[in-house]
Structures are given as C-alpha cells and as structure tokens.
Amino acid sequence: MSKERLWTKDFITVSVINFFIALIFYLLIVTIASYALDTFHTSTSMAGLVSGIFIIGALIGRLITGRIIDDVGSRKILILSLLFFAIASVLYLAAINLQILIINRFLHGLTFGVATTAIGTIIAQSTPAQRMGEGISYFSMSTILATAIGPFIGIFLIEYGNFNIIFVFNLILSIFCLVMSLAVSKLDFKSLPKQHKIKKSFKDFKISNLLEFRAIPISIIMSIISFTFSGVLTFISVYAEQINLVDAAGLFFIIYAVTILVSRPFLGRLLDARGANIVIYPFLLIFAIGMFLFSQATLGITLVMAAALIGLGYGNLQSSTQTTAINMAPPDKLGLATATYFMLYDIGFGIGPYLFGLLIPFIGYRNLYSIMVMVILGVILLYFVLHGRKEEQLNI
Image (spheres, rainbow, N blue to C red):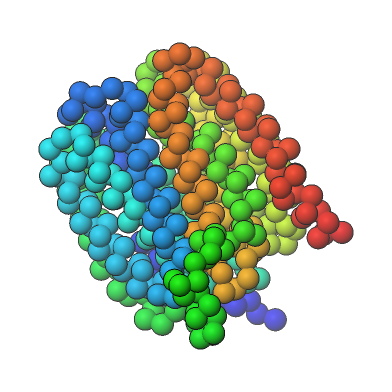
C-alpha cells in the first residue's frame, strides 16, 4: 500500500510561513535585550522582562486560540493573526520609551502565539495520521533553521547596521508571511459536526474548552525542558564573552541546527514505528550531557560539542513531545491539543529569561547551567511518572 501524500501545497506553505515568523522571533530574542539596555539604559532584569514578555503574550494568544480555532477555522485565524503580527512589527519603530516597548512586545507575542497555533493545527490536519511523527519532524525543521539563521542575522545587523534596520527587516518578512497565508486552502481539512460546535458555545464555558487534558502530561515535560533551554538562548552571547569563547559561540546555533536537520527525519520515523519512549529517554540524557559541557566549557571545541549534543537532545525532544501531544488527542481536538502543548511550552520559555536574569548576579552562569543539568536529569523520572510508564503498558 502506498503512503498518503505528505508534501501538500498547504504543508509547504505553512512550513515556509512558520520559518519566517520563527526567524523573526529568534532574531529579536537575541537582540531585544541589548536594544533595551542600549536605548533605554535599563537594568538587566528589565531587559530580561522585555525579552520574556513576548512569550507571556504568546501563551495568552494560544489560550485564546485553542478555545476558538476549531469553530472559526485555522485559515481565518492564521490570516488575521499575521495581519496584526505585521502591525506589531511596525510599532517597534514607534516605541519611544521602555513602557511602550514592553506593551508592544506583549502584543507581538500575542499575535505570534495565535499564528503558530493556527500553523500547528493546519499541519496536524494536513498530515496523514500514520505519518504524524515524520510530518512533524519535517515541519519543525523550519523552526530549527530559523534557530540558526535568526540569531546570526540579528548579531550581524547589530554589528554592521542598527536596530531600526532590524525592525524594518522584520516588517518586510511579516508582510511576506501575510501574503503567503492567502494561498492556504480556503476550506479547512476537517469540519466538525454541527452538534459538536453547538456544545462548544461560549455560553457553555468549561476548562475543557481551553485545554486538552490528555496532552497536558507530555506538555509539562516540554515546559520544564524549554525552561532550561531558555537560559542558553537568552544569555549565550554574554556567557561567551565572560568565558572568552565568542568565536565558538558564533558557531553554536549553526552546529545545533545542522545536528537536528541530520537526525530529525530518521527519529520522526522511529517515533511513528516504536513510540515515544525509545526517543525521549535517551535524548533527555543527551540533553543533560550537552548542558553539562556547556556549563563547564573552557575551550571552543567543548562549546561546539555542547551545541551538537544540545541540538540532538533538546531539538528532537521538541518534535517528539509535540507529536506525542497531538497523538494523545482525538481528531476533533487537534487545535486544542496543539494550543495546550504550546501554552505549557511558552510558560517555561517565558519564565526562564526573567528568573535567570535575577539569579545570575548571585550564582553566576556556570552554576546556573550546572543546576539546569540536575533539572534535566530530574525530568527523566518525571517523564516516566507522567507518560513513560503508560506508553510501556500500551506497547505490551
């Protein structure tokens, strides 16, 4: 029997859109704290807030979207969110004080959360069920490429341009994404029965209309993992200066991305064939080893090795847990499961920069990252309790 088609027009279109909005996210997350420090002469903790408030906005955006996306339609949600995403990109140029910048960062994150939830839902709807792990693996490569290219462009533009060039560049990409979204199919891939939509009326408000409970356990795992990784992403440039490895740090996300691009297609198929445990247990351990090397790096080669191990570990955990969250939900709740996963992911990623910004002056970077190693190792046990043992029972 031939496999159902994976590379459809909509799959490719939303993957490209995801790449560019993720590129904007990663470009800004490595530059916006510097912008706040240089332009408004604020404290390190406030600069961390400027960075992290975007994720809090994204969290709220996902919370709203998870409730309405199956009723309104993922295509409509995508177009509207990208329109406001572009408007928020313009408003960076009008941020005349720190308060306005923080508000706009929140609104930008809100639109990002709505857009990425719509994108994730369209991907889940357009991917054949028996190829879900493979499809999510290929799709998430768009984010991985953005992880490498976004920080590189941001650092390059800071060095050879200025922050206004960064904001204009982001605006151009935002408009391009909006135009591309118009090419997504007008009809959603799945339509819900009328009686189901009536039950989901706003008059019948329940917490189950906001969260897909079956997706929560695996999403908690990724929330903690994203928390640990946010410290690497946000403070790597400052940490690299402190340990005199700036040149090696410039290669970090390139090595990180290449490792994931090479490994992810194989691991996506392995996840489909053998289940989550065979992927998640070893890659939690690999991520912990990579974080340990990162925390103790004194040579460039050590930092590069850490990048490869963190890419192999964290990068594949991201796609594997997302696939697992989707697989736990019934077909009519794909949007809600996607929103639930990313809401918890965002909680970890949003809290991290601000909390780490408070802790670093007291414990230092190396101690912070060493503590994160212990947190990751603790997640192995937590994964067994929340999901791993259930997966083993299903495979018996």
